[in-house]
Amino acid sequence: MSKQQVAVKPTTLQKWLFAVGAGTVFTAVSVGYLFLIGVSLQLLQTWSFIAAAVSSLLLASALSYGSIGYYTGWVNVRSGYQKQLGVLAFYIACVYCVTLLVLYPETYVTGFFKNIFSADVLLGMAAMSIFAAMVLVGTKTAAQRLSFPTIKFVLGLGYVGYALLVMRAIWIEWDVWALYLGAFDTPPPGRLLLSVVALCVLLLRVSIPVHKYFTNK
Image 1 (tube, rainbow, N blue to C red):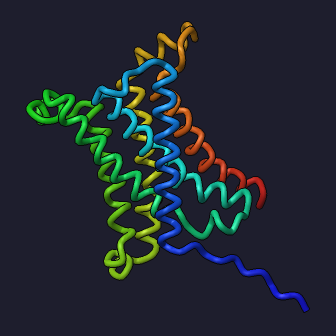
Image 2 (image 1 turned 45 degrees about the vertical axis):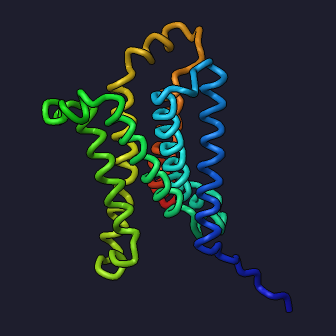
Image 3 (image 1 turned 180 degrees about the vertical axis):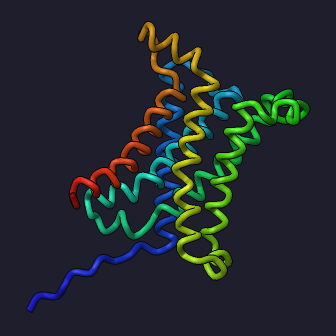
């Protein structure tokens, strides 16, 4: 009689090591792309973009895990990593927000209340608020006080926050993207690539209820 194979769940340390490893890979990819297109790595603007890129790619990984697990049934995908990837993405996003305060104080510091209802600030604040709520509900204290449906609902808002970031990127860089899309004579803008990745993650998530509908029909 053969023993039934049981998947070994990764430990918390293994999950964090995986998240840090993924962040390191995404950092290397971002730096390599900027080096390829000739952007100086000595500028704060460059590292601000790198922080945004790494955070966005980590978040994409966290949000796509459930969708990948649904279609593949991979046990390791279903058993972890999302929380650590998402938390690390949030912390790096906070670093990105700090760089914005330094680079653009006229918008985010001295002129904050003047620009608070601009699409740039409003969409960014809404997205970060959602991600902060996701991190909070993932703590042991929240798990003991909140119901599972409430926690699941808040975590599901991550897709909304991700969509808000795509909207913010379109608002900020549409003119640059339009020039590129009209010529295709230069490497694509970094935020355009990140937005394409984000849209793929969102569409993958939307495809699940569609697939369930036609499968059960």
